[in-house]
Amino acid sequence: MSTLDLRSVSKSYGAVLAIDRVDLKVAAGSRTAIVGASGSGKTTLLRLIAGFEAPDTGAVALNGKTLADQNVFVPAHHRHIGYLPQDGALFPHLSVERNIGFGLARDIPGRDARIAELMDLVALDRTMLKRWPHELSGGQQQRVALARAMAQRPQLMLLDEPFSALDTGLRAATRKAVAKVLSESGITTILVTHDQAEALSFADQVGVMRNARLVQVGSPAELYARPRDPATAEFLGEAIILPATLNAGWADCCLGRVAVDDATRSGPAQIMLRPEQLQIATDGTGCPGIVIDIDFGGSTSALTIQVAERVILARCTNAQMPTVGATITMAPTGLAHVLDERI
Image (cartoon, rainbow, N blue to C red; front, side, top):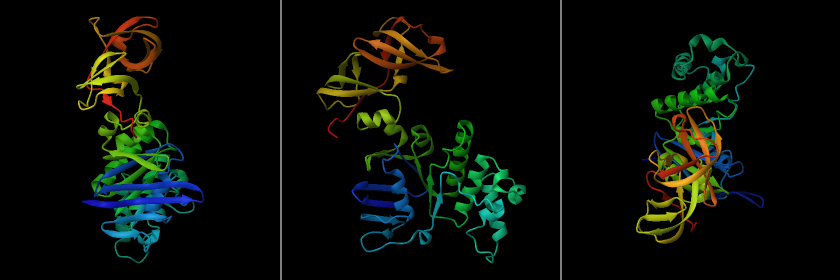
């Protein structure tokens, strides 16, 4: 069942096209991440869903109800959509309790119980209700902001880069905590981020924005392993993109003969491998290359390797670590992905 449905949505600001004919379906209870570089249109897309902006063309529907099209526009405060901005935007002059209860009428039955329940949901001690925002850590502030956004039981939660201001370790912990809360509450969620790793780890579905268009949508594993084009491949992580000649499920390239994931295509093409697919061969078999640089990374390190006239990136464990200048041999594992150059 689809909770959110965007059909051919476009938005311009003067001569600038911010969103270009975007189609997107988001399943009920799922988590979707929209990822893209700055200026790609992802925040504008979130604002159109929230109701902060109206689309020029196309339609936005939630649970079968049209929120925006050429004849209808439901304002943001009537959409029952939660919104968590980048900095949390807590009111500094209000306590945690009053921040969370800001959108709840003071005379509704069970108001205090609802605020306490929300504190439990976001894993904050109820003794913190009397604290002020400046007395909280960054991660605690984001959890309070999430509780406030959940107070009125939204049908959909929108997260606008809410973890970007946090330190790396706190960012990962807060992201996991937020994902757990939203999943257990059954709230459909859309996260906007420029962080590829964050999108891939957070979401059930990932959409890649580029130049105002949603260029590919799919599961994190699908997009990482089978991106449509070279730009998407490199945006989602380190990628080895090589020219090759295809024939019957195989590709001939500078690494030798490599199995590919498309047996129907033949002739010149580009193929992609992820660095973790290149393994250093211990028996001397495989494609030879010269290590020209090593970037130590703790448990694994990145090797820059000269292969014929090309420079490629591989990863290895410290137990396999060669030295700069060493000649090694490599063997690709798994299938190389054939990129679609027709896009």
